[in-house]
Image (cartoon, rainbow, N blue to C red):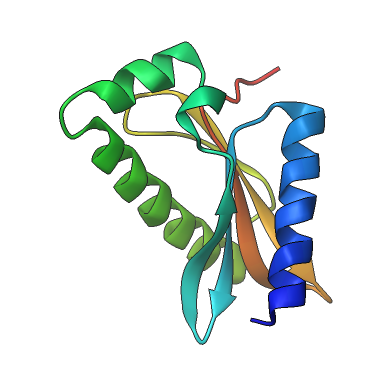
Length: 120
């Protein structure tokens, strides 16, 4: 990926977080593999419960594995014609939302909002 594109993506992710305060990770398809583009999952940005879970032994690792596994599953489901936004539970039983990144009808990535994106 060109440095200019990566810089623009990081600026957009920062702007999105600054205006929503939603913790998220953005994954995109790169050379046939889902790759983490950016995240706002800094410990200062986490909700208290998420911070507590991540401070437990193996907590941060479980969160990271869960994010990546679920993003890959969401990408497969959405690419196979599944419906748009999905609301699922993470390993700690908090609601997370998955939003497809579509370009000309093709799923090129997944935006995962996490840390208890409750049904409203």
